[in-house]
Length: 171
Image 1 (cartoon, rainbow, N blue to C red):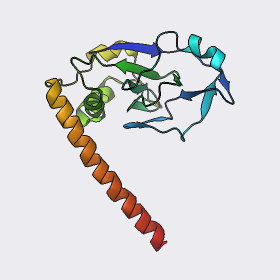
Image 2 (cartoon, one colour):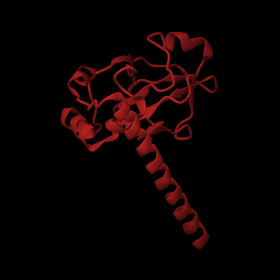
Image 3 (cartoon, rainbow, N blue to C red):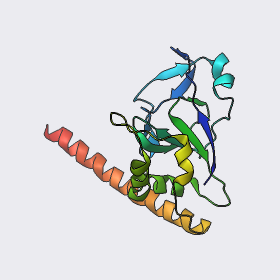
Image 4 (tube, one colour):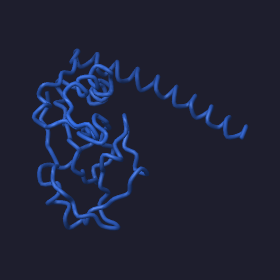
């Protein structure tokens, strides 16, 4: 599917430094920087990220608690906590935004559920990642689909914001 890097070691957390993206921060489609504010020391960053640095457009994937949340890297100056896997798409075959939508789809999420283990917190072993399937139409179609979905979800987001504002006024 893609080459991946697993960041599976414990990070020593600090009060400031480099923002640590945890499974709490990765939501379906975006990184919520307010959900959890944890940091690692700048001097530890190179060791923590020794398997590779995040690049814009990489996809972050949560392997547990919650399983299967995905988001695009939108800031390269972050560290990744355990339970986060980073995918870097081959640009000649996969468009990152399209792949993100594919990974949020029921088809992909159902694959995750069928392969997951654990009763309290569903999780997925890295060895199972090679079994997962994603569709790969021609690159120009992926770009067109992602652009369309971006535009349509932005419309929905604006409508939700208006409804939320109206509810706030009524209260």
